[in-house]
Length: 171
Image 1: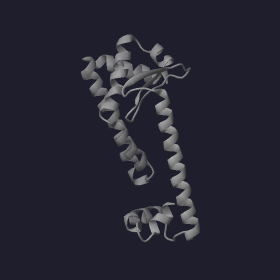
Image 2: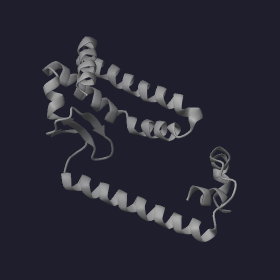
Image 3: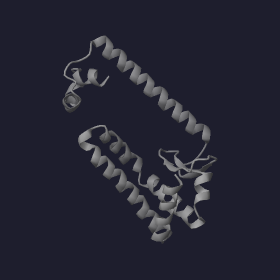
Image 4: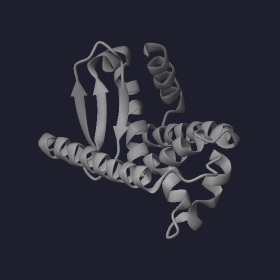
């Protein structure tokens, strides 16, 4: 699909850099390119519909904390208008009460500052070897940003450091 779009007369000019980096010097046959474009659009549409249906079925509001029962210690911020914080019972058991507050403040910072947008850019950059190092640095900076926000919220940098350490060891 990208090779087809990169050589299409209407939009190809926007993908010149893609042609050069990915080495797409020859366009695919029009029938193959158009078929792949239709499949890509249909697949993306179905995935988006499934995600929206799943989010609607949960009936949650933005920023809400969802506890899941899992043997794996996990915690993450789910972006979007109806996103929230997902935490496993195992993760909560691994942390003391003040550390739980720090963990939730950290995840809320991700939501508040829309770190998902920056992470999307980082994930796209990871696909290009030239930018892989920059993508790692951006991801690390976002985590530090959330840690600093959590420290401001809780008022205790040591608690945040303990929470980050215990969460990392638990996983």
